[in-house]
Length: 171
Image 1 (tube, rainbow, N blue to C red):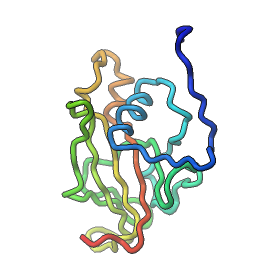
Image 2 (tube, rainbow, N blue to C red):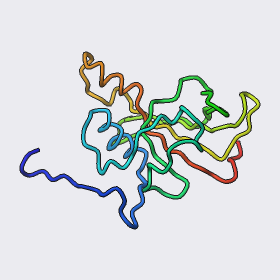
Image 3 (cartoon, one colour):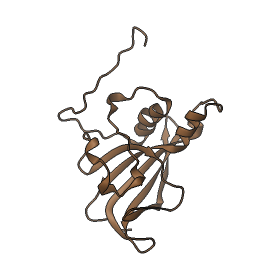
Image 4 (cartoon, rainbow, N blue to C red):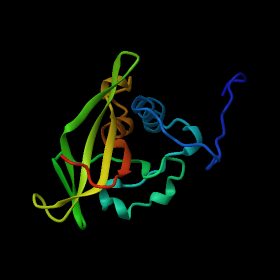
């Protein structure tokens, strides 16, 4: 760190503060820094495997700075399949819920939406849980192709924004 730089230390919980980043903030200021091993502002977003269980079994208490019924986690990405089966249900990709994320005129990432359903596909029942999965655009990273560790992180690491809505959304 040069003598002119300052590091902002953010406490784990700040009274009155709510974490509500834009989509491009999540990709550029959080996910990119996590992938590159850089210091993150305040270590606000915890890490867990979102797709290892149903949303109601996630450690939601680890994320304490968001809006009501909204949580953020770093995770490994969902499978590229339309459906990811877990104990008690499955995550289903919303075919209309994918979009590029732009920053300063460049596509820096992509977001896709998944809904959690109880039961077995294709006859499950949609729940009040929804996940938006943010991933980086590999072309946005000037990374040496020989750096396999960073390449793997670019491919597999995502930020998940989890919502609990009431009632389940109409589709």
